[in-house]
Image (cartoon, rainbow, N blue to C red; front, side, top):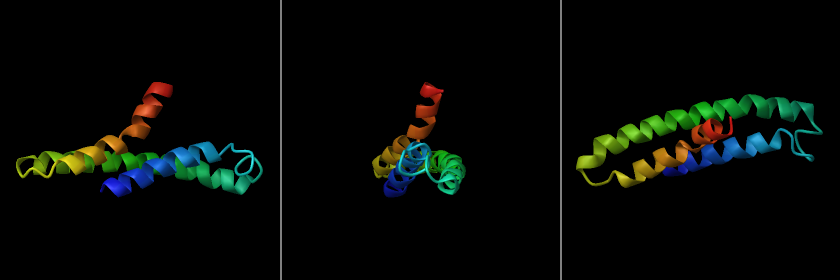
Length: 87
């Protein structure tokens, strides 16, 4: 779960950057269009991963194996926090 959260969050930030990158989206309109659709999808995926990881951390809190799920929830919440602070 933590690896999936890291991959989705990394894709969110890379796709956000690559939309206007000089060698990528700024020169290729098709790639920029694809990335502009993929960026919100990765935001939705990270929000869903944050919710699921948070629920799994709460459910497994009694067993002692809650920390990886909590870390996954915190990592997956980074795009939401970024957009809330940056606007």
